[in-house]
Length: 282
Image (cartoon, rainbow, N blue to C red; front, top):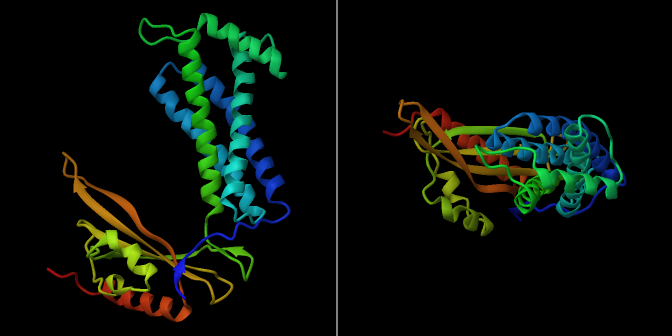
């Protein structure tokens, strides 16, 4: 019976150590670079993207470690990301304190590190125009930065564990093919509900589309080792032109990782490949 993929929640014996080790190693390297960047780069808006990037990269490394350990647990991925995210925040403060005090100290213990942070907050370390945040204002900024790092790491760590995994073969699905551009979906908002009911009529009626107009993309995924695990994902693509006439596209996931039988998967792929090769209507 067709259904949307749900991870089993299982994980291998090495999933936890591999995810934590990978995340921690990347956290040490990137937190070191991050601390120097936010100290010497005076652009607050750029610092936001550096902060988000740190969290996502640490979460990505944690997720890769979890995937190597065959973790199919979103909860485990999120927890691993949170742990390594917290570690990244802590180590970034170790480096930041070292920079602020001009390389005189390396403080690793929590209590003296906290005291050093309090001293920094009293005087402030950066300013926007003529405003130099100190005290509570700085604590708020630092808290937001920490939440971005930890939240980003947890989010990506969880997301990577949710990728399709063939339980029969014990491997991640990495054989993918996209068919595009196809015509726009008749009713994108109803597609997921229709698929849950086993109704694929919207997909079967797709014809050739045009890349410079609203269109859809169907992605086919399969376990390369067996013929028992086949999935599709569908995206609706919006198209618009900017002020210079350049085409900009944005994609929205309409249905993700819908599991099909081998026969239905093959038939739908053949039908859509033939449709994509035909001339678009109009």
